[in-house]
Image 1 (tube, rainbow, N blue to C red):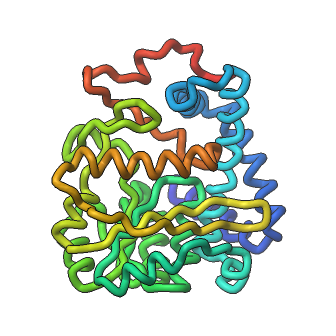
Image 2: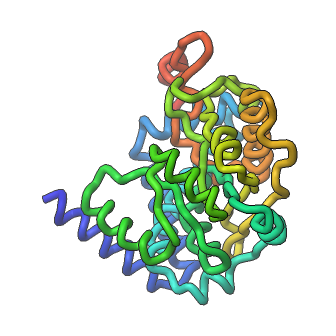
Length: 298
């Protein structure tokens, strides 16, 4: 039954890519609102994250941001279909590229870590960028085997190479060979290979792989973010990080978190607030069990 439901879901996702973009975004908005009112645990996580990150907002403003995030999340789910089956010409025409020269300059020096963060249009950004330069993408295998098989085939078609997030050696090899490796490090995977670095002034367990990869691969690090606009998408590159990695992994990680935070503050509804980014704390307290059950933005 799960196989049939997954196939039906993929078929629906494919069919939505044939609709006009504004209709897709409307459907995504409706899907997001449905998730907001039905996925109580995810809503609670989102609201706690927003309370931690934006304590200066009133409870009404925090609730409004949480609802806007779920709308963006619903739109992002439909954009997954666009990233797999969307028309390349349309995507390129509706994408604004900002700072591509920073990536091109870094490529002249050798391998490049294209450092991203989990905004709701993340997948689509890679699909668009692949039209401009070959990419080696770092991915997390999907738990659903039907989806993973579909996505694996699409990765082979769209990208130069797909690398499991656990295969550090393969990432380093790609960087040493002068490739662009697209990678996002902003999720909490526990204490292993992490340090507590401030993110929105909250000590957050943050993966340190970027520093190690840059050192081992002798690579430049170029921040790269994709967000949704009123008419399409903005792909933003920032200048390559100078003096990176430094002698301090904590300083490097704090610097990366600060760069991501700046982008999140500009597009707060589009960051992936449903992820338990602040789960671990230096005191060993799970912040999501610490907060009361009324932190759900009802």
